[in-house]
Structures are given as C-alpha cells and as structure tokens.
Image 1 (tube, one colour):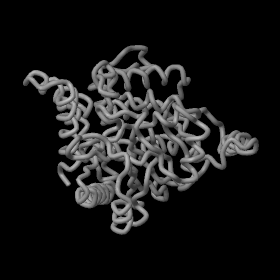
Image 2: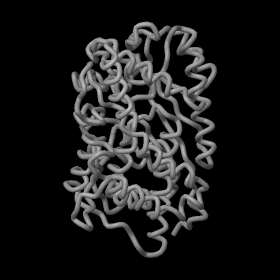
Image 3: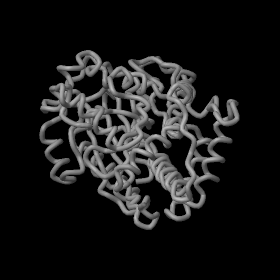
Image 4: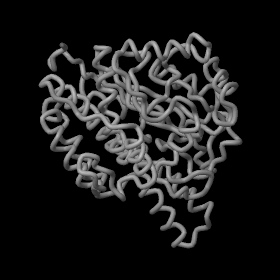
Length: 379
C-alpha cells in the first residue's frame, strides 16, 4: 500500500472566468483575437479558451503545496486582468453573470466544443457558467476510486463554502448556486456512481466509448472524478470564488479531506459511504441555501447548522492541515462564515443599490463592479 509519505498530494487549481465589458458590464461575446493571443504568449499552456467565447480558463502548474498554488493563482489572475484590461475588458471569478443572456453567446470554434454543441444542443448553449476544479495528486488508481466513493459525502460541504451564482438572467434565482442547476442538465454529472475497483470503473466507461458516445473519460463531468489527464482526484463541484483567499481555503480543505480519508484507510478505518439519494439531498441544500440552513448529519439523523459542521471538519482534518502546512488557510472557513460567501455579498450589494434609489439594471451593474473588484483583491 502507498504510504502517506509517498502519496504525492500535489495540488493544481483550475478556474474559469467571465469576460465583461468595463463600460456596459455585459459579457464580451467577441473578444479580440489579439487579446487571447497575448494571454497565451504571456501565460503559455496555463490559459485556454473555454466553451463560450465570453469565458477564459486558467490552470496552475502542478504545485507542491497550497502556498505555491496561491502564488500561481494570484499571478494568473493578475496577468489575465492586465492583458484583457488593455481591451476594456475585466475578468470576473463568479459562476454566473448577474444579467447577461445565454442566448446571445457564441461557442468557441474548437473540435471538442463543436461536438459538445452539436450533441447537447440547447443544454450546451445554456452553459453560461464557470467553476473551480481542484486536482490533488493520488498516483494509485485503486486508491483514487476508493477515495472517490468516500469523499462524495463531503462535496456538499465544499459547495456551500463556494457559492457565487445567485443571479441568472437578471433575476435572483433564490439559490446560492444556480450554476449547478444549469450544469445538471448535462448527462454524466452530479454525484458519481460507486465502483468497487478501478477496473470496474474502466469497464463502465469503455461501454460508452465503444458505442461511440465519446472518446474518453474526460466527458464524464461528475462532481468528483479520477482525472482522465492526470494522476489526480479532481474535485469539480464548487463555484468559482471571486476572493482569492476563499478559493485557496476551499482547495486547502479539500486537500486535507483527501489526506484524512487516506490516513483512515492506512489505519484500517474508513469513512462510511452513503447512498446517492442521501448525499443528493445535502447537495440540493448546499446549492439552495449555501451555508445558511445546515446539512444533514446522516449518522445522527439530524439537520446540523453549517457552522457546527465546519468546526467538525476543522477538527477532523487538524492533523492533515498541520502536515500539509495549511492550517491558516483551512481556518479561513470561519471568515467565510462570518462574512458570507460571494452569493451573500452579491445579494447584499444589489439590495443596497436598490435602497439607494438605483433601478434594477443599474443595481445589477453594481454587482458586476463588486465582482470585478473582488476578483483582483489581495493579488
């Protein structure tokens, strides 16, 4: 068995940004070709177009620890902002735009995206959403499957901390993460199926590959998955966070959960696995209420306030946070609870603007301004 010392637990973070016109606050449907070329020249293989032309994706290098990941992510945000700013554009690290319409967007002319647009039709055209994906190095295939089965329990906890998509097409959706409702229209999304081995997982994927539905497992879009490209366990459930400190906190906590579960396995223990029906209920509560209404503790059979759950997570992963040298990053969870997630701050800014006499559209523009400011805060 792989020992803790030999488990890589490297970390990489991918973020998707929306590109907005700083004058109109609308999404930029046709960003200049020269802008993307300059981004690629400055950042090389760490930046790429996303499905929609009004989006951009970045990814850190393979980082040895959370501090390296923070430095990379800050540099990437800063560099993207500097380049696109020359064209009157700003990036926002939020999972939905407060008011731009998906019907007006265009998809990027790239083979993979052309196939997605052709096969998924309106479901793909509605994908005006952005997320944050965190890769943690786990170089044993069987271990990755075992941890996937166990870690699903914690995914709603991570989602609740990240919520940044309360608005959709100019309306308050009533959800803290409306992004997931859009994404869930795609096939092969949500909480992953449970597999007893990596071989069983591969056989199921191969059935779909053999009948020609897709080429490889990168077209499986579960909330967590064994990465098809890297020897990592890829967490995909979270919204993208405007504040860098919040993003790093969630990435650190996820890394600690992975290490904690492996530590239990090493000691011949394991986290109890629960049926998808139960986990999906917490997933719904996280995207509907975020940190506000609590989640179900299946062992106790009770709804537990989210703040109590966070304290339990901090305690469970204390040894792991110390070993990974990210104690302060994990403890930032408490600051997120105190201040609220981006969804809370967006709704608050909107209400304040309305209270100040701004009309509906101008109040939403004020929300965009908030997101522009927060995306660059602390870089």
